[in-house]
Length: 119
Image (cartoon, rainbow, N blue to C red; front, side, top):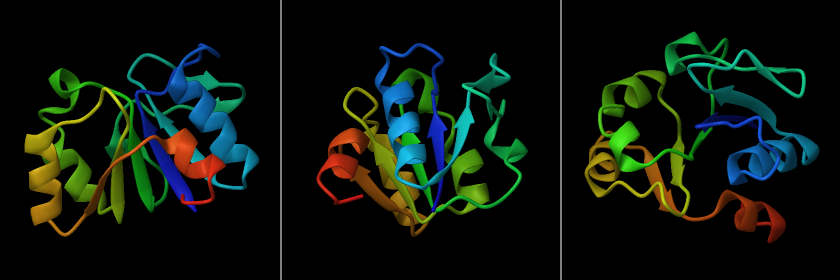
């Protein structure tokens, strides 16, 4: 499954980094998005969702509502099947817009979902 990580980090202590590594370990293709990074652990990083080279099934969010507030159009334009808002990334306004666009919205921890077989 293709998974995009918005707010990807190169810092091993960050949850977005841990999720990216665990997703890759479990066989998912990861597409990290961060405007200022070019790669993480040899994995190409994309500045924006529009730069992704292929469709993604899931977006997992690791940015707060202050950063994600204006992302509804950008997210809906790439048509993911679901968006996961990790703890601290919850954004009720964005969640509602995505749900209205037919995108499944979850407030959950990607790491917990992966470790419990619910991803």
